[in-house]
Image 1 (cartoon, helix red, strand yellow):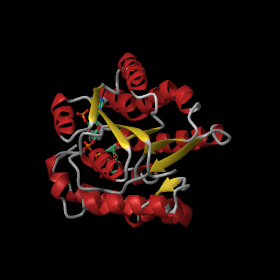
Image 2 (tube, helix red, strand yellow):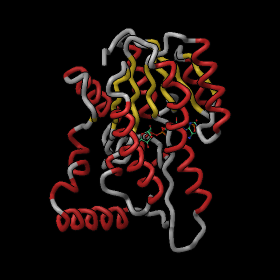
Image 3 (tube, protein in one colour):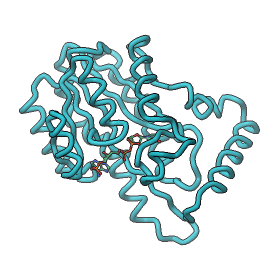
Image 4 (cartoon, helix red, strand yellow):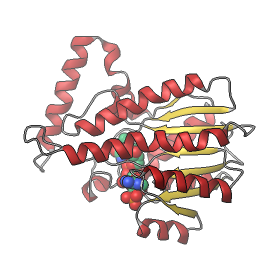
Amino acid sequence: MKLTDNTILITGGGSGIGLALARAFRELGNEVIVSNRSEERLAAARAEGFATYAVDMADPAGIAAMAAQVLSDYPALNGVIQNAGIMQMENLLNGNTQQVQDHTIAVNLLGPMRLNNALIPHLLKQDRAFIMTVSSGLAFLPAAMFPTYSATKAAIHSYTQSLRYQLKNTSIQVMELAPPYVQTTLTGEHQATDPHAMPLDEFINEVMSILKQNPDTREILVERVNFLRTAESKGMNAYYELFNGFNDQMASTRTTSV
Ligand SMILES: NC(=O)c1ccc[n+]([C@@H]2O[C@H](COP(=O)([O-])OP(=O)(O)OC[C@H]3O[C@@H](n4cnc5c(N)ncnc54)[C@H](OP(=O)(O)O)[C@@H]3O)[C@@H](O)[C@H]2O)c1
């Protein structure tokens, strides 16, 4: 991708990784549009000068309406970063997680698919365009306490490959950003200061530097996520050893019971 002169929609762009990407892309000379559900986050983004659109990524009609409005207001739109997402713990033993499962799949998986469906016909008409999905290191080695979240991210990784293949002879470049554990409030306030999580500014700096060095990259992988991304390449036994060790450690450090 060319890193300047784009018009980019960033879902969930009012906080965390989305907001940091919005600022970084704007600094490089791109027009950035932010969408979110919460009015508070939208107001804060507007205060920074971003154009904002309210949308609930779990609502198919809302996604279609938002996409139509953005395209009518910004016909030069040529990029989307599918960043909005939620991450909730689930205890699969108690049979009470249906609502979390339905909502997580709607927001994290169906949401980006539906928004892409609405934008692709327009993006195909642009001289150059891009779609960036946001998966996770947990797409490659699930966090057992977050089963549906991990499954949606594995599904986004799979879907992104198919999307890239189908769009290979078009003007749309397809990229996947797979973050490691980063200091945001995704799972609550504690995450933003967790010393085990990567500082947000370090993460964004590394992401932007990868994009500058390799603008045609398929996957944007910072150093810290590589042990997850490559987990399965070590062979079945080594993978399950890593999987169990990773999840045992996560379970022992969690104070909240699932
Ligand atoms: N931080 C990490 O450790 C990490 C690791 C791997 C992957 N990721 C991924 O990175 C992305 C950004 O997460 P983050 O860490 O920056 O956390 P975050 O600050 O909580 O960002 C998530 C964004 O999604 C929006 N969102 C949630 N539900 C929505 C809905 N129904 N409709 C529209 N927007 C919705 C949220 O805003 P509203 O609630 O206002 O809408 C928020 O702005 C997510 O896809 C996440 O899975 C994060």
